[in-house]
Amino acid sequence: MALTQTQQFYPGMGLTTTKAPFIEVARSRGELYIEQPYELYSEENHEAWRRLYARIQDRWQRYATEKFLEGVSKLCLDPNRVPRLDDVNQFLAPLTGFKAKAVSGYVPAYIFFDCLRRREFPTTITVRDINSLDYLPEPDIFHDIAGHVPMHTDKRFADTLVRFGEAAHTAARLVQEIKDPELQVQRIISITRALARFFWFTIEFGLMRGRNGELKVYGSGLLSSYGEIAHAIESPEVQRYPIQLEWVINQYFEIDHYQPLLFIVDSFDHLFDLVDQLERWMLEGKLNNVAPGEPTMSEEDIRSFLEAVVD
Ligand SMILES: [Fe+2]
Image 1 (cartoon, rainbow, N blue to C red):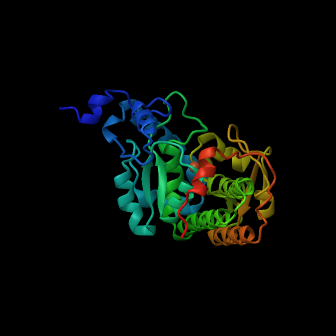
Image 2: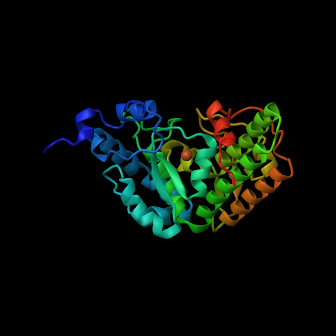
Image 3: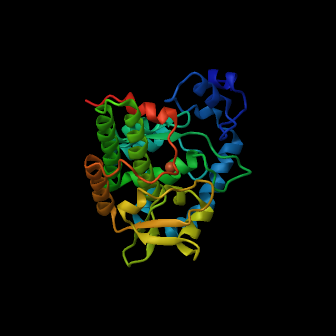
C-alpha cells in the first residue's frame, strides 16, 4: 500500500502523548488547529485505546451519571480503534451542535472558552503511552473523547459549556475596558483563576446526586481515570461537599495526584444556574480578588484575553 504524504514525513512514529513529532512540528509552526492525521496512529496507539476503553467499562456502569452512559451509547465509539473525530462529530453534532476540533496541544484560556461558546471542543489527538495507562496530567484523546465528549450529547450540559464561553467573553470585555495595564493584568488573572477553578471542580472533577440520592460522577477527569473514578466515590480520604460557588472560586487545586476535595451538584440545571451566577458575580466585581494559588495563568493566557475580539 502506498504511503500517504504524512506517513512519508513521520514514518511509523505514532501519535503518542509527548512523543509525537507530527504534533511538535505543528506547534513549532504555531498551528493550533490541525487535522487528525489518522494514518499516523500506530498499532500500539490503537491497542492503548482498546485497553483503556475495555477496562473502564465496569467502572462507568457503576459510577458514571446516567447522562454520560447515554452519551457513550449515542456516540457509537469503536472499542478497538482510536476514534476518528469526523465519525464522532457525525453522531454528536445533530444532538447539541457540538463538534470535537483537533488541536496540537495547550489552548490559551480565552481561546479555549471561546471555542466552547461556538460549540467547538478543542480535542487532543495523541494517545497516552501504552506503558502508562493510568492518570496523566496531560490530556489525551481518551480523556477528551471518552471522558468529555459523551457529556456533550446532553443538551443542558452542552448549554452549560456555552455559558462558560459567554462568561469568558464577558470577562474579556470587562478587562479590555480597564485603562491601567497593571490593574488589567491583575484583573484577568483573578477572574480567569475563578473561571478555571469553577471549570475544574465541575466539568473536570464534578460529582452529582443520582436519582436515588447516590453519588455519581460527571467530571471528565474522573470519567477518564480507571483508578480515580472509584477513589472519588469510595475513598474515605476524599472530602465531598455540596457545591458552593464562593468556596470553589477561592479553592486552589493540584493536578498531579488524586483530588482530595470534590463538589456535588444536584443536576445540570443547577450547574447551568451556577455559571449564570458566576457571570453575575464577575459583573459585580466579586471575582476581582480571589485567593491566590493554582492555577497559574501563563503569558499566553493573559494575552488571549487582551487580544480577544469582544464586540
Ligand atoms: Fe479535560
